Length: 313
Image (cartoon, rainbow, N blue to C red):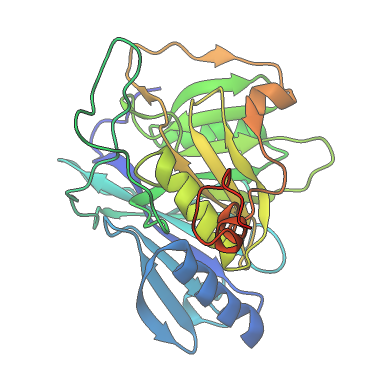
């Protein structure tokens, strides 16, 4: 389904609003988690935290009693995602606020994101040398560029997909009756929303993805989170459906957070594919439990900084 005429085009996610579980401990833990994740802290008060990515996309965390949450439904109990704000660009009117079939709130605004002068490291693939006299970077931590996508558990996949398509979202790929990958425009990254219907699984937040520059930053960011003590859910790994590299961590304010890089870019010429769910369809490869953030560092310290193949006497 194409964009409805008269409305500005949805560019991507401008802001995510989470609710904490109401405890001071959870609020403080969320603050530290997103700082370690690599976001910049803009607002730090008793009822609200506000972070931003490099391009100005925002993560807002509120206590449950905050005035902005009153009278609004939640998609699940406890700490979770409460609202997605979509940035819009170009001519046309802004859409009115809406609520999806799960009760997730959606708002629309002129995009606040800014252009950033940053690029990932090109790869020297066979037959196409893109990096000359320039080594690939090593990242000590990640600094996410933007918010990439949201994934929701649903038991209303057809109804939910129709809701997003009514906003102009386009189906990229699917697990028929089980999953729908939707992008916000005909030409865009592989998906901005993924709806996942798992038998017996209640609706709620699965995860939010943050886009980083390249695969090296996925590894650097994941290792830094591991060193900071955050728990890996899965990763690093690679998704065959979107081609993206990933690393998932548990998030104090609901679901998971993901470092994501090298996602497919699609145009209106793309024809949606259908997949049968399975472990190797979800992940071509993945490391369960992550990589120790100190991997090969402790042996190096013990070796006095020498090559590990060199033995000290």
